[in-house]
Image (cartoon, rainbow, N blue to C red):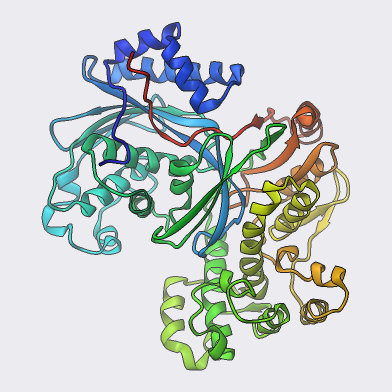
Length: 548
């Protein structure tokens, strides 16, 4: 059976009639998806009505149509760790992509939106992925494809083709899709992945594909590579698995098989305030090289550590598992292992640091080719060991509502990405996230101390590391939020270098937080207020109404 066995289908005109009043069935469905927030219901009604109005002008009027929605995603703890078999903590929220989707009788896919920068596009599934090539490796198919670089349609084409490859002997049906949405773009809350997830959900539903959840998430996530990214499936997993009123605490390997999930109830008197810096993380050569260097540092770092500690680390598959939780080692041993890593390195340095493991290192260096003069290694690896520890600790902290501990975890987490510390709203100083030998020696001593407070201070989840993907604007918004009574903690979310941060806030403190970030960040820069009060909403999928 398909993971999406049912959806409400009717003509666009019938849908518009239901939404006009709206029909009580719409109100009931919205309560299940968004909760009882009347203002959010009104916002969502406006978006659905707008999408239906646009679809009425672009798609066949009488064809059975389904509404599919996919929300934005916030990773609250466990950032930058999609390649690590460790716990992430996600919520989805009431900003989303909404689409009217129709099944076609051929294998043509027609994509449309109301925006000139996203022009109409059509393709034929069998032409882009002929039957004779469906048995090839997905990465080889991508490298051989003639892909229009930067095209918005690539985020939707890829998952459809990936699912077609997954079912090589069955020709998938075509689709008509009209979509729009209000997820902040290029802001670290998965607006691009929402397109990929939408395409995957629509393809699974209209073809009634019998595919397990984990397998579907893996295939759709790999499909997003068609856009040029090479990320993991975590965003799609969040958009397909999160539930209203909960934090999804989930651990998975890159294939998303197996995966382990827990739903943590979100306290009713908490809210999330999401703030967009309105700084767009541009994919410049420098920023792409910086991101590539972090991937190289992680992959090469674990090889260098294996070179020095083969008996202990030979079977360890990722940095997140270099911890007493997964290995028969003491905490102090972890800090001793980190000392073999250089603070910074060049490409030419790496072979000298793992001379007996060139068979492991050479493919890594070819995949993660970096032209920077040098790049951080130890701080990045330290972060990738410590952030997963925070991801795991998030579960008991949320379950016990330990607000003080949550604030400490978020402070350490953001410091792992921080680039400046703000002295006031106008002056800052660079933030030093290096991990010196002296600091590691101190952690080693404290980890073995007889003093319980010192042992606690030495825990991995207390150490920031140095991933360094924030920007001054993100750091300022975090520091502003942390100065306000009623804020539990705040940190970056998403890939960084711009985009969004978020804060956990007591519900009654939300107006003060919104007022202060507007007065202290947005107004002085002549920027519109781009901050929202949020509560976790329901995962994406087709809209299903009561049949009465």
